[in-house]
Structures are given as structure tokens and as C-alpha cells.
Amino acid sequence: MIALIMQGILVFLALLAFVGLYVAYKGPKAAHRVIAINVIFTKVAIIIALLAIVNGQGAFVDVALVYAMMGFVATVSVSKYLEKGRLD
Image (cartoon, rainbow, N blue to C red; front, top):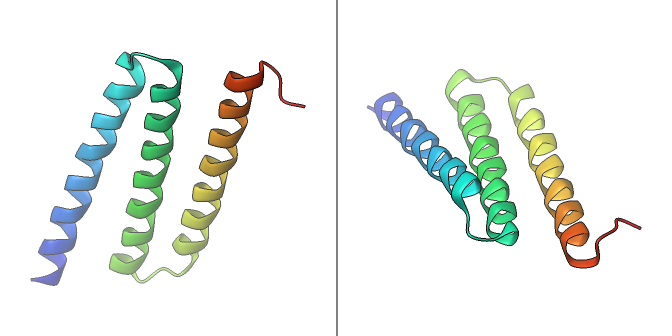
């Protein structure tokens, strides 16, 4: 029963990630696209963490954390570039 619920959650999160991909492609402004990409990074990190729980692989949690940190750094970098026009 728990495995079925986890699979449903994983499918739902994957669908939400694809919705974020659509928003990133069609977003009205660059800021909306950056936020959509951040949402995609977050959803994928959660999917990786849930897969770690389902498969009992603790190393996947580390991968999820690194992936989430990469998403944060990318979001901050692109946001700073959009605001100031440079990254320094």
C-alpha cells in the first residue's frame, strides 16, 4: 500500500515538473522563467529523495541535496544577472 502511494506521489511530482517546464518555456518574463526552473530543480530533488526512501539507498539523499544546492546557486546567479546585467 505504501509503495503504491509513493508511486502516485512520484508521478504527481513528475507531472508538476513538466508543468514547470511549460512555464519555463512560455513564461511571460525572464523572472517567471527563472522561478519555473527553480521549481523544476526542487521537484527533481524531491523525486530523487523519495526514490532514496523507496529503494533504501542513502546515497541518493546526498545526490538530492547536491542537486538542490546546484539549483539554488543557478537561480541566484541568473537572478543576479537579470537584475544587474553582470555576475560580479
